[in-house]
Image (cartoon, rainbow, N blue to C red; front, side):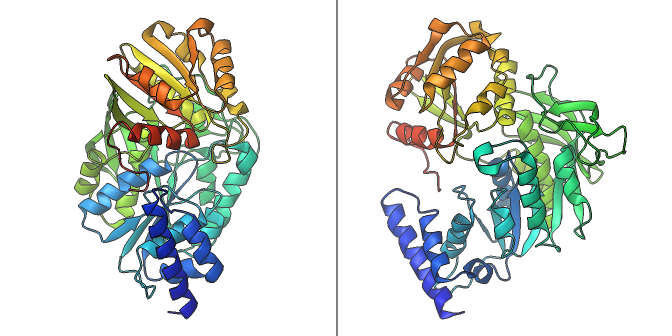
Length: 456
């Protein structure tokens, strides 16, 4: 191993350890320091490792946790970037953390969640065995730009990993187009049936054919622009998935039960998280297990036992109440949370936390494309309607125009005061923060209850 690589690893490990002692996680700065010393450090550290990469707009973290449970249950010697640091520098840091001081990685497998825009660059260095693309939705327009920019970044990244097997969402017309004119083997996953009887009203991010611009026709829609699409003009259409959800047996507030066909073998599967989007994540995880060579029974069992990623339907006891935290970051994801709440029964509190920092996306106009009206129609179910975050006033205004009674919308700017109100009685609560609000809120929650640090 080159001397500069060894030096880069040592600096990365030392700075990471120092930052963790300060309680800051150390997920990106150590990688930045290492990259300054050795520009090819990721290529050096990942040499000989079988790498699985999960990318796409929604579901990266949860899908990764599902896959990780399967890896663990199968006895693979692996590591992952569980902290969610999914840019190049964060991925470098996690490889250095799991390498020896000489720069050798003692693990056979790595499971890497990768930001969809960052995949263009990280793919130049990683020996990817399996690549998952969950979906492509509109997200953080100030950072990603138009949706085609995100798609093209992933497409360029795929050109760097011609030997990787791709696990692609057959129901996403954008994601499915990635399979065209490439040498890679493709394993398709998807959902063959509608998920919801009555879904939130959503604007499609891909209403027109990616090839001829004709409006798609659908046999059914699961959510957003996902479903059984076909173009009536040029014939572009949904692929029949190899890993397919064939039936929704139940969809509750805490979990779902489905029938899942894995390359023709049928299984009844318990998914240990609620929501239609997690049904897709489960299908993606099963597809990866098949590619990596994990037996189907182990893969199916893992879907019922994995721990959710931080902020992704995490549950906390706050005062007298049980609270579930649901990260929201774009219209498609938020509408799925609304579907979950709208299909739940009984009373609950709602807390919306909107920030506009860089990691959230500084353009918050996307909240006007979220179907808050579906919740306003059920306002009588909600005992408290709480709003917080840097852009709390904007969120309160959006809820007003959605039809919520204005004097019921409570703006509480301090998180400690917000949590006190959430826990004031036994009524359960849904906490819906954007990305940086989630970190801030978890920090406040950690003062009152035992929670794992985000990097654990």
